[in-house]
Length: 368
Image (tube, rainbow, N blue to C red; front, side, top):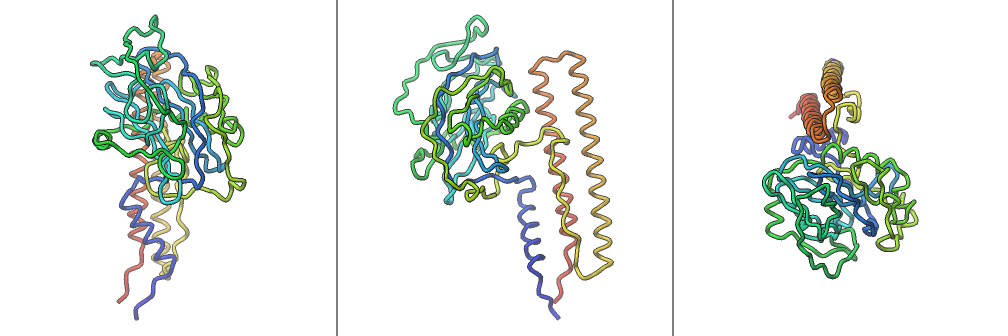
């Protein structure tokens, strides 16, 4: 006799198939009402040679159901020759979807959003790499020549500047990727640097940066260094009046496959920052022996994965101690944190794949 699979089994199979196609595909947040406009603010002075400007933007806190401002800040590039492509929001399938930023050899598409300070909708005119040194365009960036001498002046003619913070949809920026943007999209990319991740986290936990509090005019619009809110530059004014829906709870985000990013939760840099592994419900295949064996395998796997997390965390903690003993500079610390983030992502991917494989083996055999 042929058994009809239960709804639970069908859903589980669909989840496993979806997970197998993108082991590390995390939730990309989409929201049913538009983000606030880009606020008006001044750029803080560049703190030193090698720092690149990363413009501020609105992110989404899915716990609070609210947008929050991630202040613009100066960040050391993770690699010589790399530039920052800012994140952006875009109207897609009746919702506003967040696309995360990245580092790469060229600036890619960022929705046509006029973030300012060299990012005026397409490309970047705030500076350029020449060998292993970055040269700053003083016409659009705030640089002190007594501190940073590799500068030049190239005036930029900007017209019809809008402070709209999203692409497409009602009232959005009507821009599409250029051929050079498409090429940049297929180059090697790096995720936000660990210093940026810490910056995201600090912004997300600051209630004053949430749009429901500041009405589109954040008290910390920009900082001289990541997460250094003591060097804060406040917004002069909101980019436009902010009118969120009266019932923000009814406009909760919808999860879709895509890249991870600070619109939801920032990516983990260290194993201790990873969320607890989600344990599936107790198996119920109708075969007690099979269920018991699977439960034992599952517990063994979770115990081993927890040991691997702790081991990697200990290794990274030891590296932090060595850096402190050596009085390492900020560039060296950032390089180490970048490697830690890659190690943590690789470990997470490995564990996700192990869970998928075990779940797939647990599926009851088909009966003809």
